[in-house]
Image 1: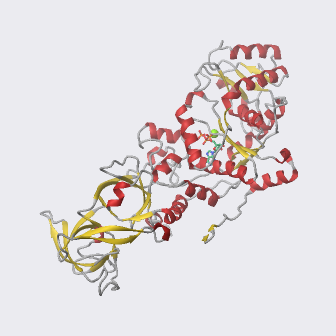
Image 2: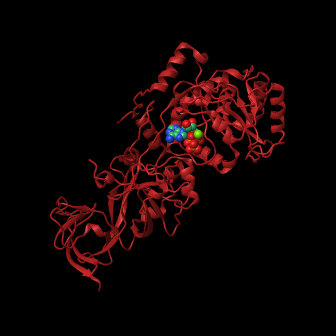
Image 3: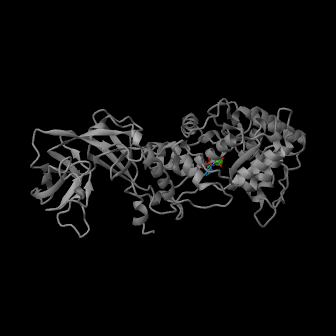
Length: 566
Ligand code: ATP
Ligand code: MG
């Protein structure tokens, strides 16, 4: 609720991560500092799951008087691209977060990571292994069976160092050697069975070019990047819980130099899962590459760019992240919650307008042909300061086809032969006659208006139904895109390939829409409630001749009813 004095401060919410951070600050751990980071790999666009991580990392930094870095975790050259580096910055900024001068790349640390690796070899804590990838897998053992030492494990540090340097010099083809940490092949935690630190990969990197024929693994690069940047709390998703001992091993064994300001600690939280969608970047990339969607920002995509184009506001996404909270246990959030959140937000901010999506022509026979009058319509009943606007009314108007039924069922309170409805903020009309084409379709209604019902004697008269309308002579043509779930089932990945579960009706394009004049001038990105039809946003495909609107969300949750829930 907002008070007269302005927006109320959001309710103080806490979670187990914030509790840890607060306790650390209280006890003076990390010198009382809080320094987080958001570390995307630039191999795709950010999605709503990333928004959760962004809100958590930047949010905690802000709440605890700390700072948050944006770090590109760009250690895997094959799939990374500058397009993604740019889109990620756009999306984080659009969500409302700022990293100031603290934007970094893991690749900036390649030289130091390499030096630490040489040191690990000299210390006898890492060795070059020359088994094939298949052999390494075989030697690793299983959850129930200990692994076996590689025959190369006891190579002398001098021999490993020589090989490692030659790996770095590009002497060997891909897959011939790896650098491994020497930890414990019998560990109960498979991640600790001599994990790989470096692989040979003759691949150009989007920042370092051909400088490196070897690349560090995530498990090696991530803790070092955190330590170099002075990260205090390294927040990541639950699947890295089993990697934490390795994270700690790396931080402890790389002989931190004087520039290390902290010994970062990894804390895991449950990732966001949403029903009716997928959040694997690999799957999202397939949707884009195989043209199931128009691009990463297709309004059906769960990407931030897609949600933005769909008409979601940054405030709604931040609010959604606050509502779902942060926990240690995996769960699945209902898409309906995301939709309810944007509905609440747009209800407050979206200007109202009238748009007829599937028009039916209505002629008001007793209204003069040459007359036009402006009726006053409230711009947003939720926000008086939004004021009112004038909407032209005349003899010929459009209404929605489904606001008329020739033989209506009992509780149909809209228009049918002989019945009355009120036109929103305008006259009460009665349907006198139906005009049909040769095929028997209703193509026009002939109506009469109660001409006293707008400002005259019967202005207060009430009829059961109120419908929206647009004056035909003043209407603009528009395209409207209606979206539905991209996938048919709640868990699209349940039966293997989510792409086999795509909803063939996820996009419907209406090309014969009639909208009130004001809507022709909307700038792309403008949020509007089309009365009775939902929340919409003007799309960037709009032209001065033809505006295009995307439906963000329906006014009510029609989905729950359709799906037979509730
Ligand atoms: P991929 O899909 O390629 O495995 P990813 O989704 O883990 O990658 P990253 O770019 O590595 O993508 O993610 C950056 C950060 O966002 C990580 O800290 C990761 O834990 C977090 N993150 C990713 N997906 C989610 C999610 N669904 N919920 C919450 N946080 C997430
Ligand atoms: Mg990842």
